[in-house]
Amino acid sequence: AASSPLSYERLVPDHWSAGGIFLGENNREASLRICPLFNIPGANHQKQFNLEFRVADVTANPWLVLGCIIRAGLDGIKKNKACPPIVQGETRKLTEEQVKEFGIRQIPRSLEEALVAFEESETVSGWFADDFKKTFIAIKEAEIEKFNALSAEERYNIYATTY
Image (cartoon, rainbow, N blue to C red; front, side):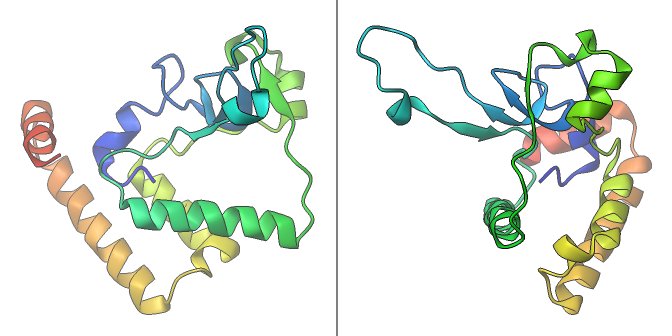
């Protein structure tokens, strides 16, 4: 969902972007967020209820991201997984014990880390044919190599004009 090396510059805490892997209510740091509801007289909260997946960016293939979100949901339903706890409030104010209790994990810090996590996940990597996985990883590794050879200014200019 964060398909470029540059994506990971925004996926850190305190950037109004997903800073961790958790379900949050009205929390911009959550990778999956329950959006605010308006409490006006007569408001129908069922019609207002929205979930926001905050990790994806413009560099990702939207069809792959949507497919993965649907597959993850179906996997949770099939395996009768419990809904994760909903984190309310700012995560930086939580104690270490609360972070563990909520199961909050850090988003990979780089595309390299994300590719390793993808390969190590039997569930997620199992959704794709071997040829697709090999090709996708090879393309991303080539992009990482090219990206690392550029200056910061060159990186930003290339992504700004491409996306």
